[in-house]
Length: 253
Image (cartoon, rainbow, N blue to C red; front, top):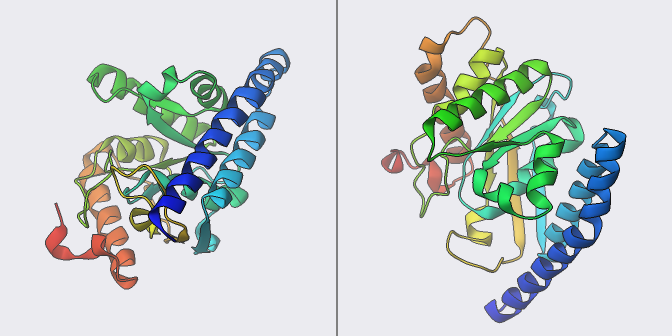
């Protein structure tokens, strides 16, 4: 598909998403505040995300869903190459309805969207403020212990090219504190669809492969580096099996 067509298609999807959030969001939030329930906010968010993905021409190819156990709090770790990586939520959510995530604190300033994310249990992280970031990790760990699951990108930011960036320790601290298993989730095709720095999305297939859980039962915080290395190696092995550039050992940070 020619880039100009992809550009126009992407712009149309973004405009429709903004209108959807602006029209549907305020009354949904009002009902949530009055009723004390936010299930409908999650449902509306899922519907909007799925509609935008289809408008952008992205198709999901998901494997390994047998490793998703919705009734057990779990930390899911993805390789981060693109803004399109958020499709991992859609892939996992049917089997893990209590799936939540961490998000950059700056997104909390976006009208309606920021308030909605906080309301449904997403946790903001201010990486520029270490004290605040530690408090966010503790808050997410408490939610894990209470039964929620989390999807995180341990690299912290999107990688350029084929390299995998160094992992941040916060997510693994969360998992150990909650004694929750960690599941690697390999994403393929997202960088091709929308590499970092590009506005528009190229239609195509995004692969989502869910790996086997890595238990943390009995681990202490002294084990966080070992857990982090294990998850990284497992994720790279999954990518290597699919021929992804992230898996090239020469690209290891």
